[in-house]
Length: 318
Ligand code: PPS
Image 1 (tube, rainbow, N blue to C red):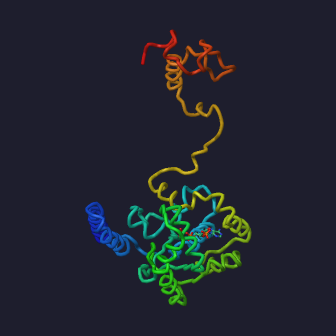
Image 2 (tube, rainbow, N blue to C red):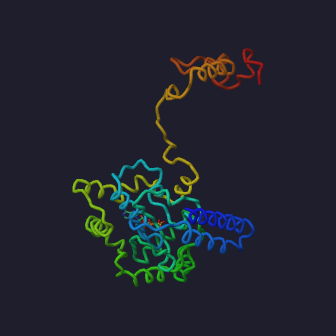
Image 3 (cartoon, rainbow, N blue to C red):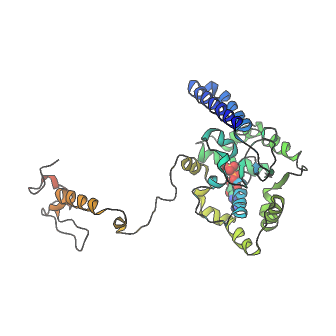
């Protein structure tokens, strides 16, 4: 208990230092990132035996795996705000202040950490590799859509080959995990395996993680993990939407109900009276109404709703 409090205290202190460093100078950002990472791995993250890490180099099928694990560990309802709600990005917890201890078991994390940076806990690691050429193209498009990348593929490809992109060299990343593929707590998969045999690969994943699949659940899992279904619910997976969700914005509320009269469920009688009075005061003279037929403008030369302040009947209140 005391040890836990001390741990939390040191963690907060380090967080404050890293925030200060970020503010102080862009040059100190690297140091801040290192402190945040160490804080997460050494102090905040407490490994559990049933933890599952989905690990990939970016653009290799992470989101697909998140959806598979979500379907395997729940009834797969699509009522979540974002997939990060149920399957957080592990290393992002260092900056978004998410308390990983509050997540119920089995916890499923996504991560892009190379093998040597990954905390070696009691849990399991599902590594997914994808053909590097497809990764390069997918990453290029991601850079364009999410990082406002202005250069062409030629320039991106050079940087990709040198490892001058987020998360460094694809070659080193894949190599690092491939070398440890035979460990009992590592399952090395390929994106191409998921494409070729989704059901078979899902069964392998379920068996490795010790998650039984009810026979009647498989059609639902396959349907929800299909590209078409996920594309239809794209906002639940998009990284930009994840950042919005972290900041408390609710997605999929832009086109809400498309009905009229929804206000009756929200307005109190007092609010209704207050609105009606203000309406009468400001617009009542125009004959504009939401019941029955729209009234005629008193001035045939003005469009209904315009020039009200000039009309003799308009309220002097401004
Ligand atoms: S990220 O940004 O690192 O989390 O991206 P990641 O999820 O790893 O990879 C994105 C690519 O995976 C493709 N994807 C799928 N392919 C087939 N079926 C399903 N269900 C599916 N879900 C995601 C996604 O389209 C990205 O690949 P590209 O080539 O860009 O389309």
